[in-house]
Structures are given as structure tokens and as C-alpha cells.
Image 1 (cartoon, rainbow, N blue to C red):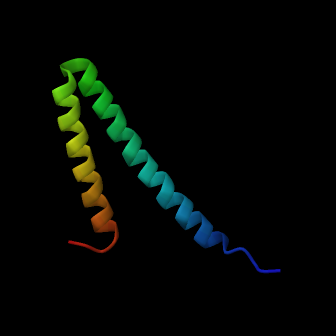
Image 2 (cartoon, rainbow, N blue to C red):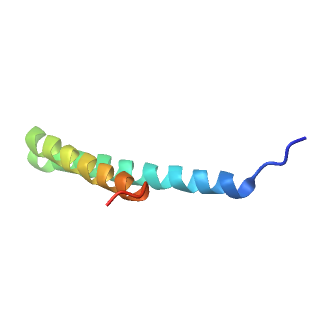
Image 3 (cartoon, rainbow, N blue to C red):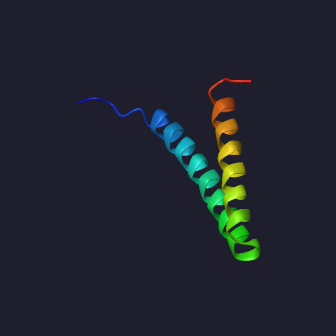
Length: 64
């Protein structure tokens, strides 16, 4: 029987939860913008959140 690499499992789970936290915070910001300022602000907020997420992913993969 093959041994489970628990360290690797924990690393992948932590990375997944970090990504989930960033995405859910973007959803909260977008919802708040929609409620407070309307659709245009919500779409702008979603675009900025996706840009920030892309930047974070790029930095995590070793980009500059």
C-alpha cells in the first residue's frame, strides 16, 4: 500500500483555500458595489477583482 504524502496534501489544500478566500472576497466586494452603486460599479469591481486575482496567481507562479 502506498503511503499518503500528507505534507503535499496540506500544501494543496492550503493553496486551494487561499484561492477560495480571494475569490469569495471579490464576490463580496462585487455584491456590495451592486447594492450601493448599481450594475456599472459592480461590473467595474468584478473586473478589478479579477485583475488582482490574476496578478496574485502570476506572482505565486514565479512571475514578476
